[in-house]
Image (cartoon, rainbow, N blue to C red):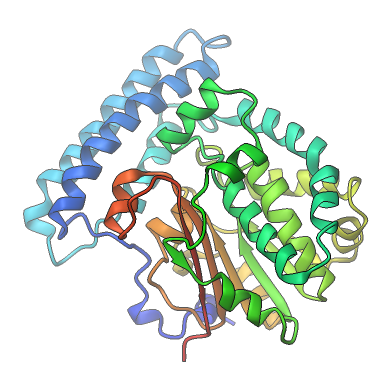
Amino acid sequence: MHRWSLLPDPAVYQPDTLDLNTDAKAAAYWFPCFRDLAAKFAQVAEKSQSAQDHTAAQRAEQFRAAYVQRLEEHQRNIPLNSGKVVLGTSELLKLNETMLRRFGFSDPWLSQKKIENASAVARLKQRLQELDSLQDQDSRWTELVRGVLAGNMFDWGAQAIANILEQDSNFGLHSALERIEQRPWLLDNLDNWLRRLKGEPHKCAVVFVDNSGVDVVLGILPFARELLKRGTKVLLCANSEPSLNDVTSRELEALLDDCSRECEVLGQAWSSGRLLVYANGQTGPCLDMRTLPKELCEAIADNETDLLVIEGMGRALHTNLNARFGCETLKLAVIKNSWLAKYLGGGEMFAVICKFEPAAS
């Protein structure tokens, strides 16, 4: 089956939530925001290679200048492109990764990811014990969802979070659980999700994951484990190429080898093929379902996927928030940008999106 298997009508699928070519308020905020982020990312890129390569500082500045130049081109072309071409924040985020690679920075967050992955794996067993102690199904699933949301706080691409992580080395999952918005959330379909879980188990869930470390190990894997315990096959989909501190498919495979030693359920599912990892075809932090690799599309179709889980700001908020899919869909994200939280009708930083939708006809 082709790549449209999740899309009821591929012709109308538009992943981007914002269009900077038509939304003047969004453009007025995001262009300066990305200009500032480029300077921050240049610092990270330089630091990642400065000890080994004396050209790192020069190349980092070249990256920043080239990115800003392209940004300004997009901004100048708004009058020409308005109503003709959609310019989403996804394009500007992907451009960041393209430019970093062009100037020799293939994975600036690699060292940070390794540190955070090792730390999270060491805490996995304790987190699973906390969850298993919750006997009531609704309570356990509520905490699993909250864990995914809290894990999604660990995003070095969000300036508000980067500031917290830089200032507090002890900031962990439980700290994040205290920081996310309390219910009722900005978009709160949790009760609908809990009701659905009282019905028949899903055949197969495809889960698009986000960040390394706490996010994927302590947030997503316990969630996936609970689906596996219900008899659902799980396909975890991670980036094909590095982007910010997002986990890649190759890194996720190595993580599952490590996590399998910490959890029998995960270990058995990983070794038996009931838990699988696929590359998602993306080179940036967002998600365009039109560009999924053939191998993943075939797995989605062959396993009769009936649950789609999309996690994180890039994949479930900057893209796909308003898109409808051909199976039940759960979108989970913490809004780590105050402008975006207000734009979507909330007032707080770390507002929560928990959107559960039935299959589109």
